[in-house]
Length: 441
Image (cartoon, rainbow, N blue to C red; front, side, top):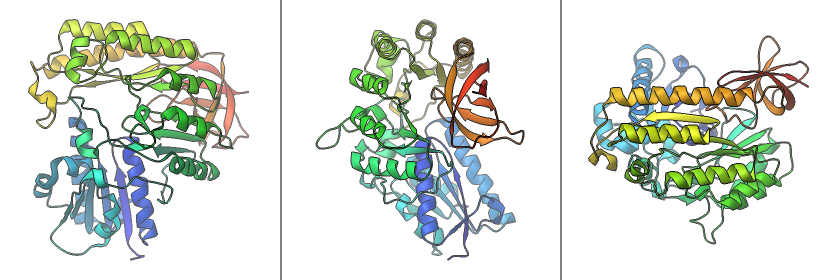
């Protein structure tokens, strides 16, 4: 078994990446050699995403590309894991005969057996994701970045947004015990991680399902008191579970990034109701005002969804005015992705795709202008920057506390004599729409 070489491709969100890193750990512990080159791999694993149509297309294209290695290179076993097989189940297995094993979101623990199996026909393991054990300190991970680590604090979701398939794919909300998360954080910090990024489907709902109940603010307070040189951020909050005490906790601890990722989704009460989002535009505005009142230097990130069934021009204008009124630091804009297995499929009338794309383009242009103005305000200010990559020129690429990994911009740093994985104070000298440039001071 030790001679087997395996290549893994991870698609989708950071939560998926955690699953991929744990699968790699299980494989390595089982004697499988991990390779970054798919051409020399005897086994290829694709951990898929199926949240929206574009993610489904990317997953299928990646699988077909990986299948070509079975004809031209060393690959003799192809495994597809994650949300795509969980969503399409046996139908997917029938349409992709090139694949040797399908593992749903409740079957990651079977990755070693699937990788080393020789029996036919193909595996198709789709156990209930609600029965899947949560990841913990006992799980060996092969991290994809040395100084930043995603920490999954919960799995699944109890909400019923009409456009979302996640509860069906991942099951209901299951929070990890706080002590398990704390132990993992201590281990990661001891091994050189400088930024812990807490993730879940809804991080701000953390602990509500535990007995006794706890909360994200209590978890953050515990993490902020750990020894070491590090910072903590959390992603994927929800307007309904973002409490004032949580904002106060973030404002009180210097190790906690004053970075609030809160998907608003829309600015029209009528569309929010159709989406299954149980808050109003006024509630959103009050929440963002409260965050800025408690933490004046807070950074707000959100996501918007345009082209939802029944969205009129008036609804879209309400969304644009919300973006203008709140002036988010960062925002992502998505067009509605329809599918027969989500509740919103039964809603109407449909918004033509061309109209939805135009609305997205307009909102993105508006947000780009707002982000540029926000970034201009950083010029001549000094911020701690986590240096993550060293370029051949000797300069560095890094991130401030208000730049989350992969979804926001970066900071280019001029300076020598530093090491990656260190925090350096940087004076910002130039700002673009997304990225910043500065000099170490």
